[in-house]
Image (cartoon, rainbow, N blue to C red; front, side, top):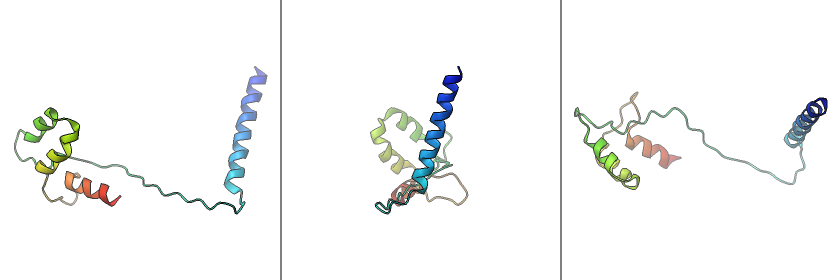
Length: 99
């Protein structure tokens, strides 16, 4: 049992020191940069444009294959976004295009 704990501790220390070495190694051979985008907390509401009690887009989306959803959402969710409201399809697409 002590051998297993020692092995785990040794492995963790080895990994820790390898990470430290990689973080502080300055060989000057490579200059690597990475770009990434973090997106969080999007309140997407594809039924933004529905003003009726029964939204027709719901039934059409359920009946259509996913490949046709883009066309359906463009057709029904075409109102201008309103500040401080959930993200509609137009604003969502605009964000994706900007990214």
